[in-house]
Image 1 (cartoon, rainbow, N blue to C red):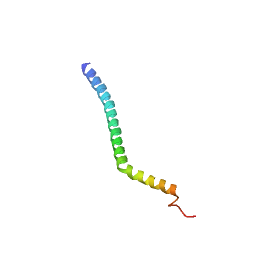
Image 2 (cartoon, one colour):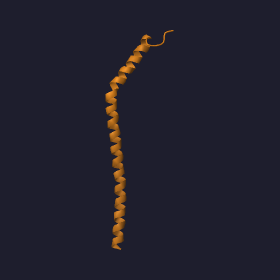
Image 3 (cartoon, rainbow, N blue to C red):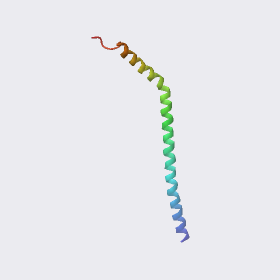
Image 4 (cartoon, rainbow, N blue to C red):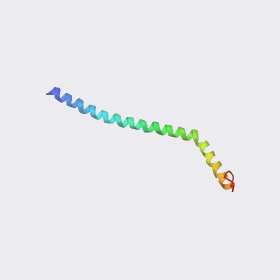
Length: 68
């Protein structure tokens, strides 16, 4: 009877740990994706800003489009 109780307790403990490990893994994935996004925005942000500024300035002055 004691052996059955020990096996049941080990099984329940293992199931609980598996759920906790999944939450930790998901949290690590979210943090990793956030870090990658921040780095990518930091590296490309200035170039994208300059491109939008160039487009905006050309629209304001009317240059850069097809001539009519």
